[in-house]
Image (cartoon, rainbow, N blue to C red; front, side, top):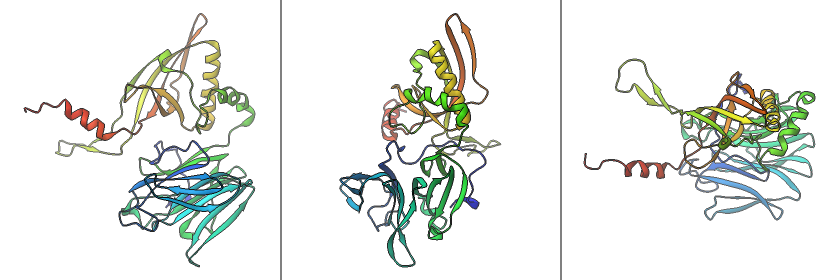
Length: 342
C-alpha cells in the first residue's frame, strides 16, 4: 500500500519488474501458476494482456490463454492480479474509461464507467512479495483534468485519492528497488516547451513512451563509473560488504561533438528534461558489448559546452540504469574462466 496515499517528495529512479510498456494495448504483470491458483506465490511468471479480434485476452505465453472480455473499439488497456489470482482489467473504449473488478461485497464481477474525462487508466498489484501480502493492494490509477488519482482494492475502489499533477500515465508498478512507481508525464509550461518538444518528437523512437536522446555514442566519447549493489558497513566485520538492491545505476560521463542542428536539438532536449524531470532513453555500450537502450537521467548542473569553429563540444554526466542481464549466461561465462585446479 502507499504510505499516506501520497507521492514521495523526490522521484526515485528504478526499473519496473515487468517489461516497459511500449503499446497501449499490451500490458504485463507478474502472477501465479494459473487463475485462482496461488500455490506457488505471485512470482511464478510474467503474464501478458492484449486486445485481439474484439476480445481482451490474458496469457502466460506458455499455453494458458483466457478470453476475459468482449469489448468493441478498445484503444487502451491494463490488468492486474489480486493475491487470490483474480484478474482485474481497466480499458478505454470509444474514449470512455472502464474498470472491470471483483466486488467482494457481492462476490461478483462488475464494470464501472469512469467517463470521458478519465484518461490513461492503469492498474497493478503494488507488492508481489509473499512477505508483504498483509499490506498489498491493487492500485487503480488514472488522470483527470491534469491530476493523478488512485483508488485502492482495500476500499473496494470507492475512495478517490488525489496524488499530484500529471498529463498522462505511462506505466505503474513495482520497481527493482521494491517501491511502487508512477511513470507519468508531468504538467509542464506548454508555452515555453511546445517548440522544444516539436524538435524532439520526430527523433523519438516510434512506440517508445519515453523521450529518446537520439545522439549516437559512436559519434562521441564517454566513460562509465560502474554502479553495483554492494553496501559497505562500518568497521572490520565478516559482513562488511553486503548486497543491497540490484539494478543500481551507473554514472556515465559523455562528450558530444555536435553540428549546429544537433546542438539545437540537444539544448531543446535538455530544457524539456528540466521541465519533466522524467527518465529518457539513450543508446550506449555499458554492461555488454552490443549497443543497448538504457533509461537515463542527466546529472543536474553537469552539462557544459565549448565551441570550436562550426562544431559544438558538449560534455556532461548521466545516471544510467542497468538493464536486466541473463544471469545464467553470466555465471557460465565467469565459471569458464575459473582455474579448476585450485
